[in-house]
Image (cartoon, rainbow, N blue to C red):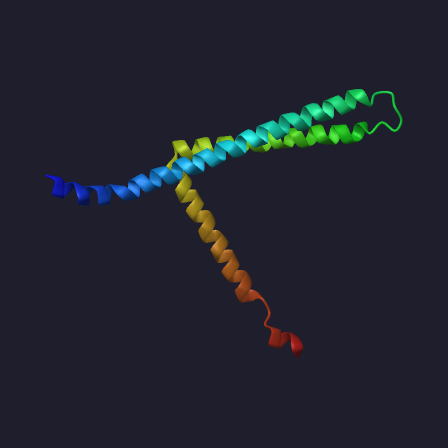
Length: 126
């Protein structure tokens, strides 16, 4: 019975490695999401504090505080889009991989056509 366990373990190793890789990717993504969320809150509330502190002073720099708050809202928007994309990939993996394949094929075709249609250096000299 023990002699059959070694080949079975070898067959399962790619699945185990894949699961560990996916866990690592998800862990890194969660760290990235946490950093983006912290940055967005720090930017927004930092800008809000500067906006209130500089009220009635000259030069006010309140426009810069508003720019910081706009960047914070943009970071939050990107975070929401990334989380929606991850949720879609998790729920519809086959469809997401098909779309990703079409995008990669399109990018490769675009690169080939761009390189093929570029003028040669020998033609430019004449």
